[in-house]
Length: 166
Image (cartoon, rainbow, N blue to C red; front, side, top):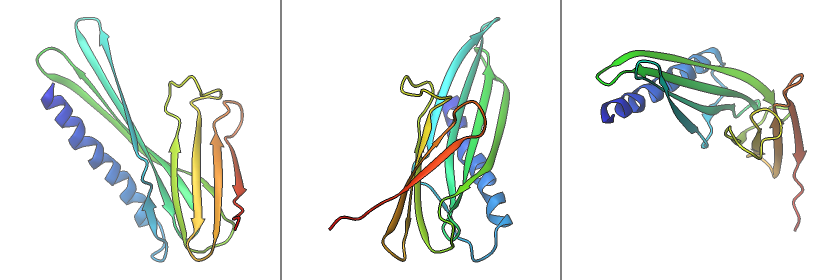
């Protein structure tokens, strides 16, 4: 089992980096793409007939364009099928999808995001929601946003401009 966990630790970062590299190459040189600080990983195990074991792990992260305030949600997954003696099959998948632009104008922004991890009894809609915080690093401006996957129609993204009390 230690060898298998080492396999996951080696594969997931490599897959994530290759997915992120493709986005970086597609953007203009003056755009600064930053990785959020809230990456998560969830793993599960299941038994099949014949004493085969499936192990699946998924991880997500957010990439943020600090000039335009556009962001991408990226997900990588690794699935392993094994028996009592060896790894029989390894499946991998990963992609990033453009989600939204938080501010309408270009500037210099900071960003972070975190999302509800399913299954979660607090998730009323789909797999839950995503909390997104963005601030303009050139002036005192920040937005708090919630992105909900409601299960019917497109995702709902609503942002609130923060007020600063003195």
